[in-house]
Image 1 (cartoon, rainbow, N blue to C red):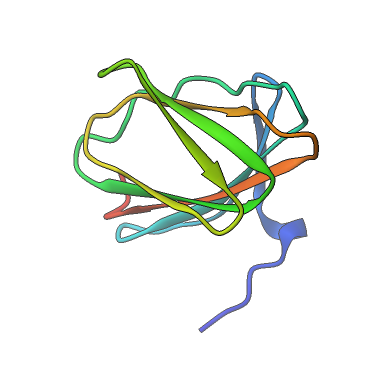
Image 2: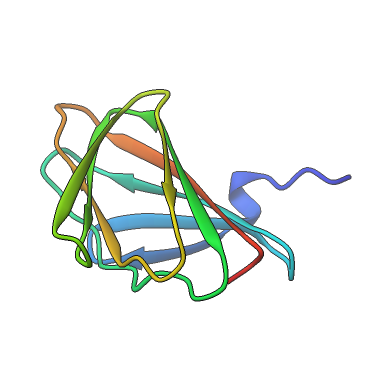
Length: 108
């Protein structure tokens, strides 16, 4: 086991989306995305060989799936399963900072 502190996570931006990737192994990836109210992050093209899970830990977001032209609204505590190859992007539709934790397995 090991603890990975926020200060040790890989930091990157996807448009205005603040991303932190805490771990990426050949079996799993875990990170977070943070958006201020009204912001929309970049489009993730989807993952060819793995599912991705979104967990809305703070705020309220809409996740847009370009493949089927559908929005999925998430509030604190909700989980969204994103299957292989589904392009998606996150928009903060709430009034406070939104944080979505994400994980892919296997690492894709």
